[in-house]
Length: 160
Image 1 (cartoon, one colour):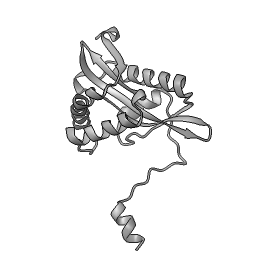
Image 2: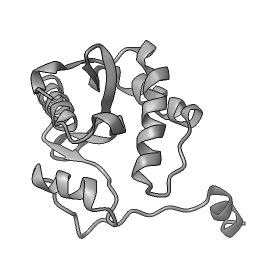
Image 3: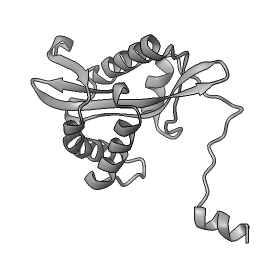
Image 4: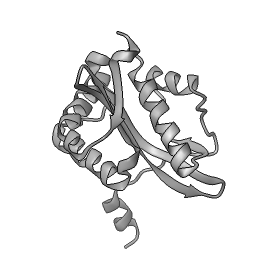
């Protein structure tokens, strides 16, 4: 596929329904233990779109949605950070450079509009991809940080 056949454009609210199906299909193919369906994916993508609509981009191939990337801006001590976000590409369009095109568009917009200085995000340690892809782009693991998670019910139980 020629990269010129891929069009990157701003995400629209009307894209979210179709993107939610692509998101759930991508996660099903990736098999990382997260069981997304179209309904839960829609809620997540709508959250991101509502939070930071100007930092959402979609990739189209011959007018068909092929993937998207959306993230947010967070003020930090050293300047604005591009944070978290979701990148996903339809399994039928993977390994064509679409993720790289989406990353380039997102980072360029974040730097120009928000003067973003850093992109902080999470990925799966146990998976070669996408960790290897992120590292190729210059991302590195932060040894001082650890992702922590707890059940809200469990926290409240311990605080009784």
